Image 1: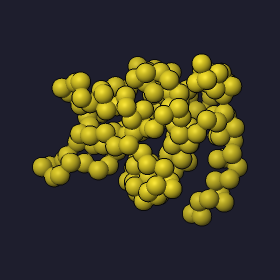
Image 2: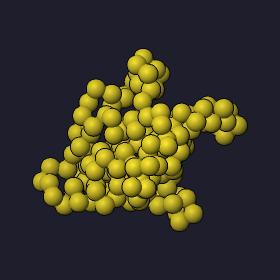
Image 3: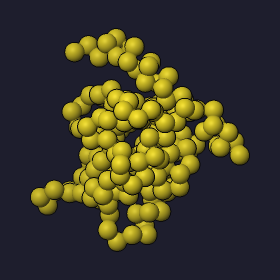
Length: 163
């Protein structure tokens, strides 16, 4: 299939053992579905994330406030898969890290709604993007070689991030 051939072209998928990307603090390595996360695949259907619209999980409400608007976790899913999952389970928890969530939010394109895009990509809610957040959204939404993406972000980061 076309999706399968695109995934093959994006090789190498796996970093060698001990590489910095595999040993980052907070990484999903060693947990269920970590291979899908590393390879930018939807951990529900295991197809490339960039092949369909993506979504994130929004956090559960805290202290009786309205439904959360911040991310419940850093994972991306196909919008259709995440919606189906949310409609079929009674416990709303991320299938990768088990973080509780209250709803699924489709990631708009930058052209569609840049403000909402930033809100949903900004995992820590600080109003800016960290290298990791940028890498994760690009890996989820663009059909790119992940190693080349990492190299580009590392090379250009000082130009993009003034502080």
